[in-house]
Amino acid sequence: MTMPIAPSGEQVELTHGDRRAVIVEVGGGLRTYTVGGRDVLDGYAADELCTSGRGQVLLPWPNRIEDGSYEFEGSRHQLPLTEVSAGNAIHGLVRWATWVIAERGADRVVVEHVLHPQPGYPFSLALRVEYALDADGLTVRTTATNVGADACPFGSGMHPYFTLGTPTVDSLTLTVPARHAMESDPRGLPGAPRPVEGTDLDFRRSRLLGGMTLDTTFTDLERGDDGLARVLLRDDSGGTELTVWADGAYTHFQLFTGDPLPDVNRRSLAVEPMSCPANAFQTGDGVVRLEPGASWTGAWGIA
Image (cartoon, rainbow, N blue to C red; front, top):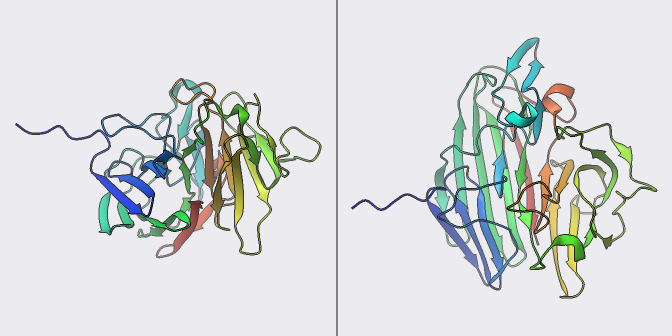
C-alpha cells in the first residue's frame, strides 16, 4: 500500500546544537523552527495543509496587488485574484509550487524553483532559497535570477509567525526600528507612509504590544553598523527574546497580529521581511526591475 504524501511534500530537517528547523518541498517554506525544544515559529504539523501563509515564501511579489492588475513596460497584465473576498492577487506565485531540493546537509539546505511565464506574469525566474542554521540562529537567503529574454518586475518576502510561548502576543514587548508606517485599508492595501513620531505605531523604543491590532507596513528602517534592521520581541515574564533581522535588500517589515484568522488570532505575530510594500507592482514603490541575466539577493534571519 502506498503511503500518503504529506500536504507540504518532502520534509527536510536541519539541526545545529539545540536548534531544529523543517523546510518543506511545497512552496519551499519554513514549517517549524524550535530552540531547546521550544517553538519559536508558529508553524503547522506535517499532516496539515499550511494555512494563513505560515512560513511561506512570497515571490515574485509579497503581500497584495489591487485587482491583480498592473502595468509594466507599457503592457497591462492581469493576475488571477487569489484573495477573492478582497479582489486582490496575494503573496506571489510559488506558495503551492513544488520546489527541488538542490543541496542538503545536516544544518543547511538549498531549495530551487523555476517560475515559468504564465498569464499575468509572462516572465522567467530561477529562484533559490538557502536555509542555514548555526550557533546564532537561522539565516534565510533568497536569490532570484531573470532567466528570460525581457526585463521583469520583482519583489520578495516571507511570512513567518513568531511565538514566545505566551497564550497571546498581548503580553509581549515589541521593538520595531521604523521611522515611517503604512496602515492598511479594509482590502489590506497600504496608505501613504506616515511618520510614527507621536503615534501609537512608534515602537522604536520597546513597549508593550497589549491589545493593539497590527496589519501594518513599517519602513524607513534604522539599521545597525552591520547594515541590519532588527525587530525584537520579548517576554519579560519569561525572560525570553527573539530577534528578526533583515539586510538592506529588505526595506519593509509587515507586522500582523492575525486577528481575523482563527488559526493564528493573536496567538503569534507575523514579522514579514519584504523588499517592497503591498501593491508595489501598481505603485512602483520599491519594485526591482530585473534585467535579463540579472540577479537579486536578500537575507533575513532569526536570532
